[in-house]
Length: 76
Image (cartoon, rainbow, N blue to C red; front, side, top):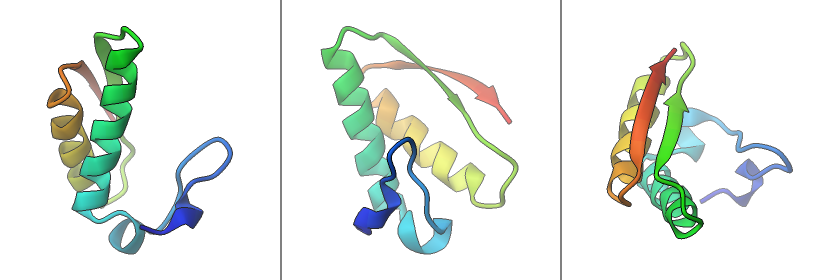
């Protein structure tokens, strides 16, 4: 994991090198767990039109669902 992807207000990096599917899944499970423990039941998930978005979206969606949260997919 590249620690420089974590910025003050977002997570940024090069999709193919900084965001392998294993990292994206870990991130999704961490976010989902944090939200569930705080009482959330649903999260809204969107993506942009970059070529890497379908992979990242699919992986993070499945990881979030595995924590028990419902996902509202707003698409692009």
